[in-house]
Image 1 (cartoon, one colour):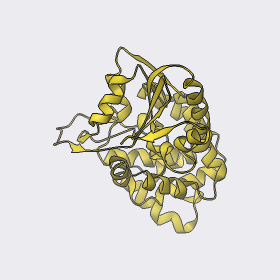
Image 2 (cartoon, one colour):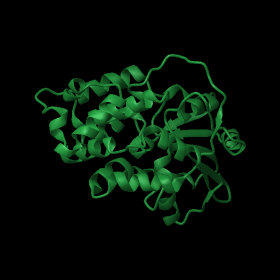
Image 3 (cartoon, one colour):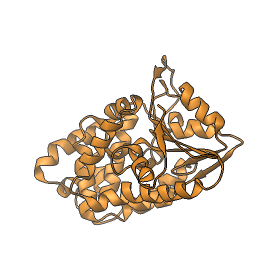
Image 4 (spheres, one colour):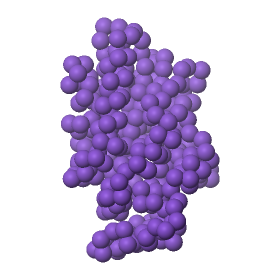
Length: 287
């Protein structure tokens, strides 16, 4: 499952699927937490940024959280796919790069070829991309093949539910792409290697998220970041730390808000939940 539950840009930048018939909805119960004190309540909802149209995740608990909140906070504001794609191309394409296969150990070549085929891409396309962007493209293609779209993703639905209410974001599209673009080549190649090693792919991600299985999400984080502390800081813990500081400050003001971020940020001992508890805040899982 990996980093598809940490940052949404791999979805927003690429996937644009045509409309399709909607099958009978499949129920999901993703993780929902609440941080509260005497006069402030902050819902923490773990999201998946692209979904098939058949997933019904708006449980009574989630519906109540939406209805009670005056503000929605997400990772980035409602994305403009064309603008993000243009920025991606600007950052991702570079002349003189080695072939994508040459950027991985020889024993990863078969897995790379399988991942490229599953994503519906070609090695020639990836050869022209920086290594982080090749990993992003493979992730995007896998979700595309599974029928997932950002239009059906949690953030898109929440934006509609909060129409007429205040909406804000922790980050920008540019800053999120920058997290990848600033990685060292070593970390970019590690990201690519662990992306193609992820044999469970999008279906495993969807199953864990739908079940609210934060233990499985935490294991996925551990597998991705093992032996890669700077990669972990860039994509996970550094962001969790910034967000926990913002939430701690926001708890000083009354009201109810909803924060919706990739479910991987709410899982494990380095999660946003753990950091808030370490600050002495009361965080309770409600779903």
